[in-house]
Amino acid sequence: MRYNENYDLNIITTIKQQGDALLTGRPQPPRMAIVYPTYKCNHNCPGCDYEELINKNGSSMSEEQLLWLIHELHIFGIKALEWSGGGEPTIHPGFVSASKKWIGYGHQFGLITNGKSIKNPKICEVILGGAKYIRISLVPGYERPFQVKKETINSLVKQRKNLLPEISLKLLLTRYSIANIDDALDYALDIGVDSLQFKFVRNDKLAEVDKKREIQVREYIKKLKSKHHSIDITLPVAGSVRPKMIADHPCLASSVQLLIDPIGDVYLCCYYRHRTESHCLGNVFKEGLNNIWGSEKHLKIINKVDAEDCNKYDCRFARYNNLLQSHNTSLLIQESCKSNFF
Ligand SMILES: C[S@@+](CC[C@H](N)C(=O)[O-])C[C@H]1O[C@@H](n2cnc3c(N)ncnc32)[C@H](O)[C@@H]1O
Ligand code: SF4
Ligand code: SF4
Image (cartoon, rainbow, N blue to C red; front, side, top):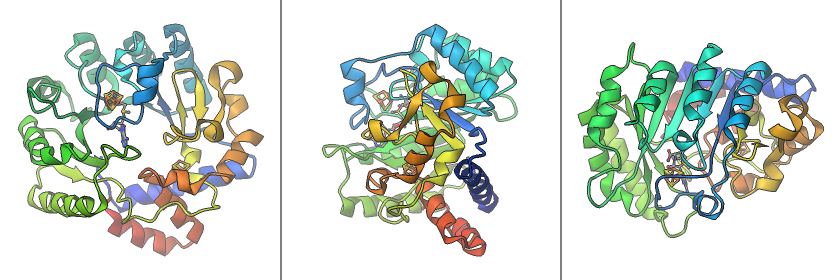
């Protein structure tokens, strides 16, 4: 994804329109739905925020529920679907049929994956047929540098048409994986993907990088970015460097997205993991989206977002929220220009 002034400004304008409409009782459907079809996973990454849920019950929605959900999202007016987890979305038995159904409605989807299923021809085919973007999380291993063979991703790169899907790799930065930053870059350059993202692990005391080291790593990645122009290197959201969500402000940014977990619970945003009760808007299988979106409960939750919880993660929307509070358009543009996600 290429970040630029227009990109940021578009987001801010959409968020403002959507947020105002929601708060004044004229809700518009959000543009995007993030769907977690399963809490099961075929990998075991150090620092994974969902480890407990994956080990505990590994809940999944049934294939029938998943197909119903795809229809519900379409008739509700959602334009963008992102498959992700809590868990690995591609191992859900209904992943291919649900993706095909979504494509059949004339939409594309995004996919956040550990990439281990790409070698499955049916999954590869549906990705090539309907994914707008795919982001593969890299996990350093002992036997080979990362869990997915270069050739597997490279074959996806070679088969795509008109540069779609956009393919990015992501390395979650833990105290262990910071040693693999150069490996990740070599790997990404070798394969010829569009971008390489780095993100610091949060909420895991054992895996987190200490603050002093984080600043050094940040500087190092900045240098890599200035040296390598054939690939887009990003470090989204800078934690201590970026403005954080300010206390007692509503989260307008949540008005453009919703998240549905494997049991059908609908959440305000993807940072719900450690605040399931205060972030849950309802259950899509019991209530349907029409009754959930824009409900009294929904508005109450938007207005009562706990900034401290938001700031445990690097929510990239917090900055948009803060800028919207300033009501200063020229400041919005200036901020957008200098952001570049560093
Ligand atoms: C939970 S995974 C689910 C999708 C898929 N299994 C994957 O690994 O891409 C989604 C993203 O969350 C990130 N993630 C997991 N635990 C995290 C944590 N503690 N802090 C920040 N990001 C985390 C992963 O790196 C991954 O990019
Ligand atoms: S592959 Fe994704 S869901 Fe599975 S353990 Fe790793 S980060 Fe967590
Ligand atoms: S983490 Fe907080 S600021 Fe970010 S989208 Fe969620 S509720 Fe809004």
